[in-house]
Image 1 (cartoon, rainbow, N blue to C red):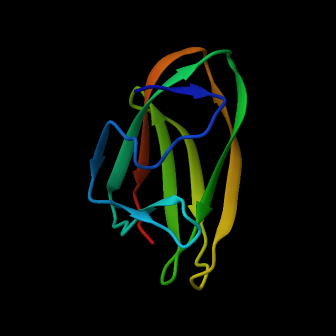
Image 2 (image 1 turned 135 degrees about the horizontal axis):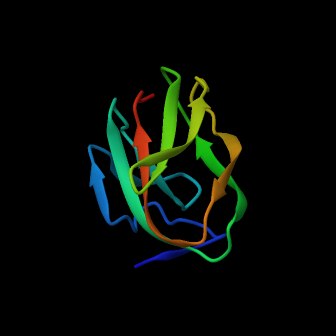
Length: 113
């Protein structure tokens, strides 16, 4: 399975993962949960056009702040801070440049929350 960018990644349709759980949330969607330091998920993506894209994630971090690091083919393309949200959902986003092509998107959590 490969996701076309721009588009939406389904959390439970990863091609590889370490340490995370995929859980049903209160809104009927799926969450990447129970994130500890150095956990990750990976997705196969197809980027149609070289361009700047917006990466957005709905996050909920009841205890600590955290970090997300996006990598394509082993190269870091984006660092994103995840704030401590006191258990409330919040959207964090940033722009990222992606070249056209097929990639394995490695979504790393160097600092879990």
